Amino acid sequence: MNDKKLIVTGILIFVVLVTFPFWFNRGKAAPMPELKLTDKAKAAKTCVMPTDYMRAEHMQLLDLWRHSVVRNAQRTFVNTSGQEFNMSLSNTCLDCHSNKADFCDRCHNYASVKPYCWDCHIDNPKEKM
Amino acid sequence: MESSRRRFLQLAGISALGLTTKPVLNAFAVEHGSEAPSEIVIKKGAKALKAKQWAMVIDTREIHSTEDIEPIIEACNKIHNIPKFENKNHEIKWIWEEEYKHAFPEKATDYLNEEIEHKPFLVLCNHCENPACVRACPTKATFKRESDGIVIMDFHRCIGCRFCMAACPFGARSFNFRDPRPFIEETNKEFPTRTKGVVEKCNFCAERLAVGEMPACVEASNGILSFGDLYDPESEVRELLRTNYTIRRKQNLGTAPAVYYIV
Image 1: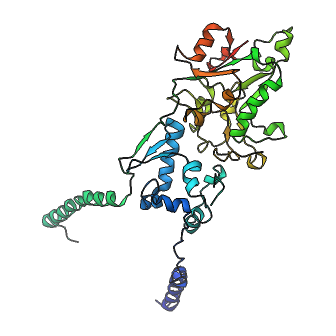
Image 2: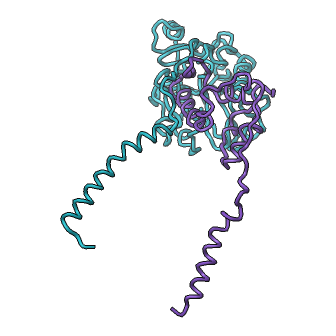
Image 3: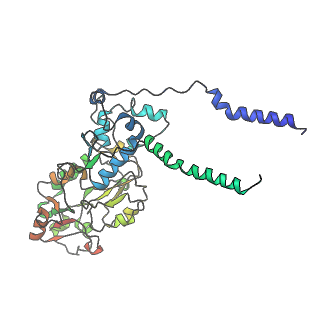
């Protein structure tokens, strides 16, 4: 046990290094992104599903929509309150949420996800804010 | 640790108790997982046109020159955001013109009727009843839709392997070698573009049929093209097939094309 000092110092340095990101960034958590809604989205009050559900699961919903539209030729979605929607990312979702930079991108950047929806789907289909 | 019968039984009891927590955890998981509420309904639009197997009849007697078919091709290109590439190798084609000898190679003879020889023929995806491309696709990105017989693509799934292009005997599929967006003259914002690395082809205007409209080419054709259900004996296409002599492209390959030509 002659190397006790060396070992303890080594462990200390290791612990400090490993925990460095935690204490270095303490209290500096990036604030939740604030989403801007378009006037049209504000007027509609609710999305096709409740906001909480949309926030967490919109990608699953879009997946479901794609599957039914492309594979089953079913394009009409009736939500829990009986409202009907055309299942189209470009023509329904992005028609209301036509402010990609202030809506989609803010959360996606915060969560560091890079969906490639817009490689093909055209944002802001009607050219207005 | 000294093991005894008593100790063993104690452990077994505690473990059995542990098993009962599973249903409790499941209950929590359901509460927190936000699964889609079950009351939602997904259905066809009220105006959607329905058929078992969509088919097209092209009356080539009405086609005399390129001018007759230009507007038809243009109508398709415009609504589907089809790019125009100068380089022939990069060309994207959904519906295009072809000479008789290329459209019907096994029917062309050495001394062909001059009118037929120089007449432009409209060709497009045949939406075969037995499509070779569907069998070749490793990801089921392209498939024959059960509900209406359209051979359609899910671009999200296409990995760009181009097996379907090799399999299709009609050259009806094109590959996006480049990002098509800068080459689209006038973008139809209601229809998506494609991206580099996917194959594309005619979709018989599935998006228009869903809202009760005829395909764009049929609408622009002034009656040269007819469209309807091949499996419905009362349909317009069946009436035309009954009363006219028609041919199909490369019928001997057994893919059973659903595009018929009156010659």
